[in-house]
Structure formats: structure tokens, C-alpha cells
Length: 241
Image (tube, rainbow, N blue to C red; front, top):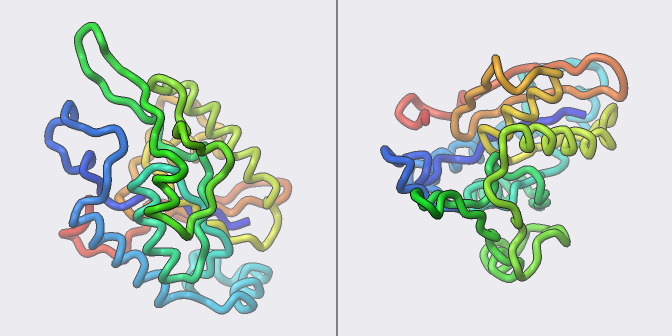
């Protein structure tokens, strides 16, 4: 299995100079939309026919995607910024977004009101709301009319445990020819990289650029290969965020 982690494009929260002004489920900025279009154009221009991609994967001659990309699945976080980014990719690459409710950003859906109220968990968008804006997306049963998040603010140790569960779920495709694009988040990608690398929560931090691509090759058994991190050749310097 080739696993491609892609961080969503710039959101309004990413662009805030003061994070006390953040919202619980931000949308993309104008710059984020530019990044998204650049990413989609880049991947579409290098798209390989499925049979050729499978052949290259089998003989190991596309270790760094020098021959191009050909994703077989598009997994998406249920947060708005990832769904917006993924929708453009889906249209460009002919893929159907599959929402996984457990690849959301570290912390979940919450707001910090400060003072005695503090951090309050919020439910996230409802199934009807998401279907109206993203009709192509396949939603899991975990997303209902009451939203999908029922916790407060997720803790850092809890996020690492969740990343471990996602790794176990992905293991069903280990050793196959699946080339999975996971549209997710910066901090959650950090957690997933740590569980794959058997690293502790503290000590190392992976910082990923908006719309950057990172690739892991996951065999059925043996060593996992991190082929590259933070690839952003599709972005000019003024769109790096």
C-alpha cells in the first residue's frame, strides 16, 4: 500500500494572527483555494493510467513518483476544510471522496470561551448539511443528524491512540497495490507518522505545509518506508503557508 498524506489547503484559522479568534470548523481562504487548484492541476497532469501505475508499483520503479501519481482511493476527514480541498481533487482525478470520521484534526470540534466556561466541545456538521454541500462524498454511519463529535477537546495522548486505530484500519490494505490519498490535517498527520514510526508523542514534531504531500509505503510485513515528506513542488513561494 502506498499511503499519501495530504494536508488540507489554508483555512481561515490558519491565517489568523490571533488564535483566540478561531472558529470550530473553518472554511478555506482565497489563498487556500489557490493552493487547492494548484494541487489538483499538479496531480491531474501527472496522473497515470491504473494499469501502468500498478505495474510501476510492482517493479518498484516509481518510488518517488517520478513517473507520476495514480490514487485508487480518496479518504477525507469530516471537517469542512478537508472536504473543500478534497472535492476539487475528486473532480480533477475522477475519484469519490470517502469520509472517515476518525481522521479529523487533533482536538476535535471545540471552541475556547476562556474564563470559567473554558473549552466546549461542539457536534460538528450534520449529515444533511454535509450531503447538501458535498453530494459526491460517501459518509459513514458515524455522521448523523446530531453531528459526529461528542467529546470535549481531545487531548494529545488521545489523539495518538486514535492515530493507532487508524493505522490498524489501514492495515487491511497493507501489501496491496492500493494507492491511498488521505486528505487530513497537519497535527493528525504528525500523530499518524509517529505511530507508523513507533515514536513517542514528544521529542519530534512533523510540520507540514498546506497541501503538501507525504508518502509512506506499507508492506504486509516488514519495514515501513517513508519515501518523502512535505512535497510541495506545485506551490510557488508566495503560496507556501
